Image (cartoon, rainbow, N blue to C red; front, side, top):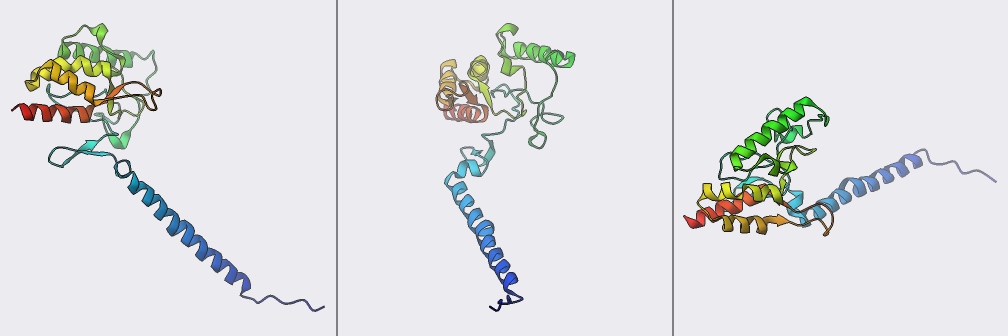
Length: 201
């Protein structure tokens, strides 16, 4: 029996066909499928951008930011970057629980919030005093939101009841009903307050 000599280019031809098939599958079809899925969940895929009443982007629902002025609800403290809220330097302070620096920071924040909100220091919730692991937590606890209601109401010329209702409307429930706690997205809440104040004027 004579052994058939393989064509010198048969292996190269097989390899080329595999290359073309995998390029189509992994380089075109798979990315196209991922893109299609992303567009179905467009809000999340595009960064969960929040826009104001004029349609202008004002931030992301996923990233915390600072707010200046008594008319705004304040976010959690941030250790991301030198001045905080730096999305390119997301991270915690990594200070230990017995750190004198952390203790001093908490004491300073407690005194500042107590003066700003006119409340006893012991009533201030933990999330108002400590940064999250990312330093970019967009949400605050319902307790911290309620603590800020009187100040925000007065600064915007709104009733306390109207601002409390806005907090209740913007309150997010635990994921699937049991993961996490009630929380409020600060940016969405501030936009809701702006709309209320604008409508009153």
